[in-house]
Length: 134
Image (tube, rainbow, N blue to C red):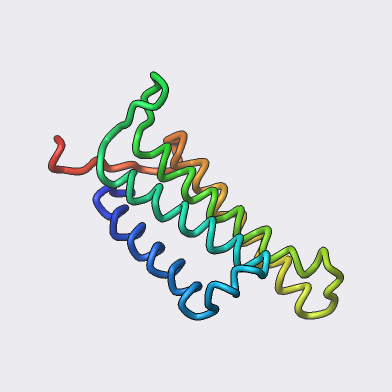
């Protein structure tokens, strides 16, 4: 993962989140799943934008690296998608719609797992710093 692309990804995600409000109106946020998607996408976008700007931040005396912010952003987005996909199943939807929702929720959990991998810089991901900082 190259850090220099994170502001672009965050900006795109922020625009998509704001399109939810444009398409559904502010009243559309009364629907809990839409509000959840809007909140998680907006927060994830802001975290990605923040991660792409600086190498590390000092928060309450702790050093928070850019990959921590990017990983939390991805995990948050995946968790929001998982919950919004599973909500109809919990409400009692059955049949093909329920099967799709379960498969999509499991697919969304891969984004949570990838976020964990990025946040902790495990051996499964390659984190490239911004070449301008080398």
